[in-house]
Amino acid sequence: MDREHELSAVMADDTRYHIYRSIAEHPGMDVTVADIARDFDLHPNVARMHLAKLEQAGFLSTSFRRTSGGGRPAKLYRLSDLVVTFGFPPRRYDLLSRLALDALAAGGSRSDALRVCREAGAAEGRRALAVNADSPLDGAAVAAVITTITEEQGLLPEVTWHDHALRVVVHNCSFRELSSADPDLVCAMHRAFLRGVLEVVTSGLGRLRIDPGDSRISCGAERCEMLCSFGVEDE
View 1 (cartoon, rainbow, N blue to C red):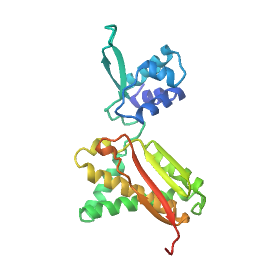
View 2: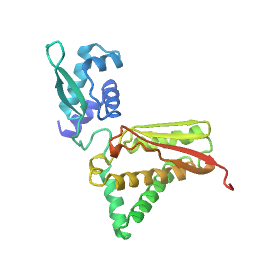
View 3: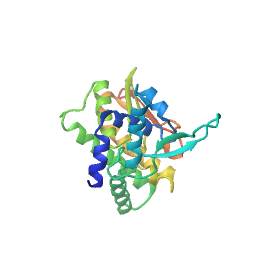
View 4: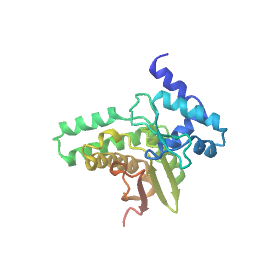
């Protein structure tokens, strides 16, 4: 069995997929067999089997924690640092490389890089809307489109529409492994991409205002958040 086939087989099980997604949404957190058994209502042996398969495939890494009673150390599982080509969530190096090359061709300045990323996001938004022909006016429909796009980008999103505001939370940075060199720039590029997506997809809701918040995965947080509100066009 080749590597990609092996990885797809591991993720083909629906329960295992959701266990991995739960762990991936908290990349710095350790979990035990007991945690997974409780959270997914599984027998501990079944939970252990799913975790073992994810570990063997390289999706998870493990360590041990000694117990206060002096018994067998507890085995801890967490999201692996290994970048798997097939893996979920996907790592969009192809997108970042293309954006970086385009920015370099445009002059290489920070503002050029952000502009290129914003334009790429807008193009992604237009692609997603092409199947609908027109920009959706309903907030719930907008949230659904944003969810689809951010899922495709591997961002593990939570997108909600409430009180005429759109809240976009992502639990994964698809450029995580590259952000250590210049986290401010990589984060700004990623947010510019998302801004481009939002500007296109939410165009029917009014003038877009984005509060980027202070939480950033590139700086050690578990998630990034953007709160979008909308005003009338002639304000």
